[in-house]
Length: 579
Image (cartoon, rainbow, N blue to C red; front, side, top):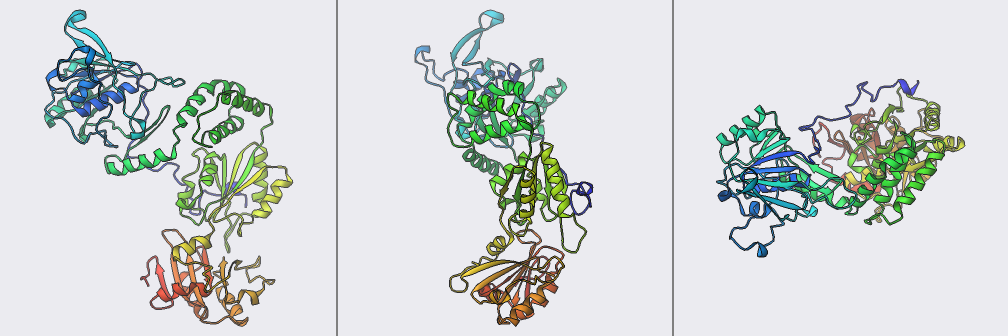
């Protein structure tokens, strides 16, 4: 069978490349754009500061007597009429923001909606005088919240093209004419009636609107922010669980080195020159993959000669012929959380993914969206791709310059026929590497909570194939050594031969009471377990079945699992009653 003609899964249905989204995540350029904010509360101050950090010209509409202390600090005002020479520094920490809607925990109420804006490194205060009754006074800009707290910091460092916007205070309530030429509109409204009025006016003017803490009047939402600008990560739970979004943000903070900001700025500076040297496709992507490897190699910013070194790499890649490579990746037993980080990176870098029938859709969901996926699975007793056809396909794709991932269930080096594939690729001069995966036996042991090499029961563990090429038992196995009571044996692909395996072991002296555990679909939601002994293994496999991937573990180290079963020979998981 030609693998290219196969569907993307065994049901013949193409899996969705993108699961449903509650909201569309969009990163909106606001540099130099007019944004209006109605209200003088702490919540409105946070929004104004955030928008100004994005380069917006933020117009705040609010009467002076209802401005919160935080908002006063943001626009350069003070509570007491101190001389300008001894103005206290503006606050640098604002209340925490809800990750999904951008609300603030403690909010100053009683504020008539009004709007604010901020500019470059200066805040600007308007007061009646000249220029249409206004006098513009410059005061020091407020320091922004630390990006370690997940908020937007200023973007004034070199290499980052965005600049800080400006905040302009209008000491008056909002009115319908403020929406003229506005890109966005935000408000902090005390009552439902105020919120409805502002929302209606903004919508009538064709301006996207957000009313703080009133999701029914929000056409867009704010997320919890991890800032390594120009790298920005925003997290939303669509208002369902703000605490969860905050926890996610904290985890992401630990994964992204602080130096990533400088690497991203270097990428901005190099992008055009790299594009001039490398054509789109594999060479250009290979360059950026190497760039990413350097960026994540340690929490160190790029050195002084980094740009020169990287451009030299681009020159070398541009002069080299396009050559692909193949990576054999272990997909583990099915649970996507058991994938290694290196496996995920390989999936994200692939042009083509040749995946086995047993690879779960959860694992495939982690692959690069643009990658072509081809099912090349082999299952016992079913129509399958020939190994020779798979080998030919890998060679053909790699010689066309593609990055090919051969995605195998479990570990590719354990009963995965990886040796044959590696030999063919090396014979063709194609680079090949291997990313190991968690083999099913290891996942089974963790699910059982048992050691396969418990020092009181077993001094060795063996992974054994449960069938030969003709479907029966292998003829060249040392059954006497497998019957050793101090050995734990795990048989792969032995569902159909389970009674024969038990008979051979008992015939070689193994006790009929030797503990046995049979597990199907290990680590998956459909996992099922049977626990019994060697003499009734046939009953176990009849209950478990062999249509799904089956592991059979045999040995004294499994005794604890048998003792926990009530009674022995019971089934666990799926629709069956627990033991």
